[in-house]
Amino acid sequence: MKNTPQPIVLETERLYLSEYTPAICNHLFTACTDEEIKAYLGLKNAEELADEKDKFRKGLTTYFHSFKNFRILEKATGAMIGRCGFHTWIVSHRRAEVGYTLLDDAHKRKGYMTEALGPVLAFGFEQMDLRRIEALAADYNTPSIKLLERYGFKLEGVIREHYVVDGVNEDSVLLSIIRPEYDQLKKSWNLNYKQRNPAKV
Image (tube, rainbow, N blue to C red; front, side, top):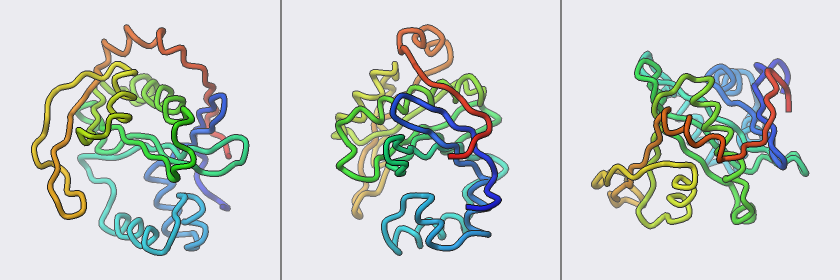
């Protein structure tokens, strides 16, 4: 896309993690075509596009919170395969919630999210000045909980009837990691990534 704000890119062995910020989001939804939006965000159909447009119209940021996301791009194909990053970023309190998704089941069980999450967490603590990163998962989402525990997240408790899924309120498991824990653990993560600032992918 022409004239898109330049993103920071984190490069791992198999992936590019391309920054997606409020500025890029604003450009995308005010200056780009529907097809460009779908391609950039990896949207599959008109319903997903309408949902993203609705989020943009309602406002993704306020004076109180913002976001910093990364599009996950597969190096071998250039395809966007998922997202990983921070939403509900409360800048004044130096905390954010991390979230992640792969867009297709074909990309699961290949270690892509393990490869992406470590650099994103490091970016959060070291460049966004976060003190606390939290994550929420359904209690039955064992792979997600194991991934978070792999990176040192600790269980804090259960938030009852927290998320609506298919019309039903479900509990969420709350996990978190704080800066002192990250400082102790980061060497053991053996992160291998480069940062290009800014770059275009």
